[in-house]
Amino acid sequence: MDSSDSQRKNIAIIGGGLVGSLNACFLAKRNFQVDIYEAREDIRVTKSARGRSINLALSYRGRQALKAVGLEDQVVAYGIPMRARMIHSLSGKKSAIPYGTKSQYILSISRENLNKDLLTAVEKYSNAKVHFGHKLVKCNPEKGVITVLGQDKVPKDVTCDLIVGCDGAFSTVRTHLMKKPRFDYSQQYIPHGYMELSIPPKNGDNKSFTCTLFMPFEEFEKLLTSRDVLDFFQKYFPDSIPLIGKQALVQDFFLLPAQSMVSVKCSSFHFKSHCLLMGDAAHAIVPFFGQGMNAGFEDCLVFDELMDKFNNDFSMCLPEFSRFRVPDDHAISDLSMYNYIEMRAHVNSRWFIFQKNIERLLHAIMPSTFIPLYTMVTFSRIRYHEAVLHWYWQKKVINRGLFLFGTLIAVSGTYLLMRYKSPRPLDYLRRPSEWVTYFQNTGHVSL
Image (cartoon, rainbow, N blue to C red; front, side, top):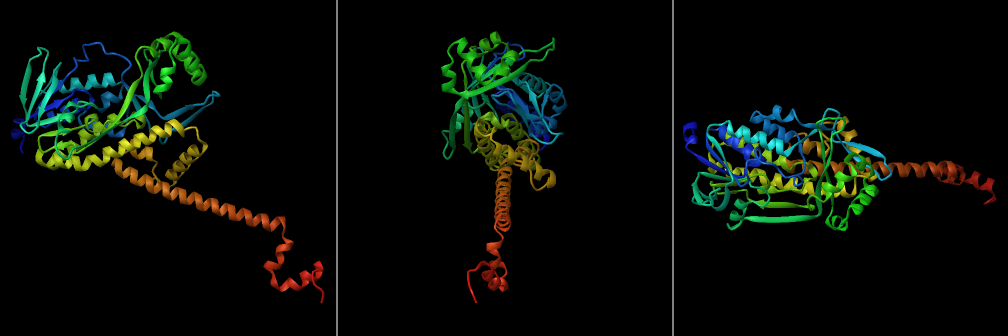
């Protein structure tokens, strides 16, 4: 397919969020006619609501995708480096667990600002257009037709060659694909909810700090009054109160109810050569590995690489995208659930911290053989499912090594204890030639 042919191809992207707008940049670069249909109004001109988003952690996979469309430097410029996870104990002690080596960090990014930048980037392409206030009401992939409801409330049919669903965890496009034979789907809500809080800037700086409280819903439901909230924070997060301020803390806490978190899996990600799912529409994950956006951005990058490989042939690219990407996105979904348990229950464990130190030591000694799981996921483009397999192998090797080391210590300790605590009664076991002399001296026999 040459560029003149690709210009005649019309692509409809449903959803103008992070993945939808980035995907539009990739596809517009290939001279397709790209139209984004976004149900919301333009966030660049409307006031956004606080409290419903979790700050983003941009890492290597996401940065590589942004780099491919020339946006990495622009986005990184306003990111805040994060080099470690800080553990605050109830006693007031603070301990940092580094994310990687001294030179490695992830970037805290504003979701709203990133989305604005991506939408602006889309509009720089003459062959791309964003239709705000247009909600998808019907999707017919076989015929290549979608029905959207615009601001005039009149349904409008749009014909396209490819429909790309980037419309989030509760995707309308995916709902239509779920009616197709052999389409698998599952979802799982976790018992924790989240709430966004804000630490205001100090000393006149124009930099606030957004933080997120994760907690079981039943715990949220117990906090009914201002006094309940302040007592709770005084007990569990005492160092946060002077940073947030009592009045602001109570105001933020009751601004919105705690939000739920859902994990979504489906397979496959495509329907014939007419429809494709990406981002949360294909694999919504819980936020505890910081890979939701990065995985979605990598979807766009992988698809772009496949378009290079198969010369823009949708009939080849779409099935290969599902074959290649489903195991990876399912793997990061599982890892995010694992990290949810780890952060909830293990980060204060001495054994957990000891294991992390062992991993870092082995990585320093053998950097290409022993790679911490977090490093593989966050600071490389090793496929997610391959990272899991390598992690399992490393855990097996480390556990066996620790077992052998522990066994050696136990045997050596027992030997030394027996050797130096009671050497004489054991002499007859080690020197048979002296048995007679031994028994004569101890009076046990007489000759």
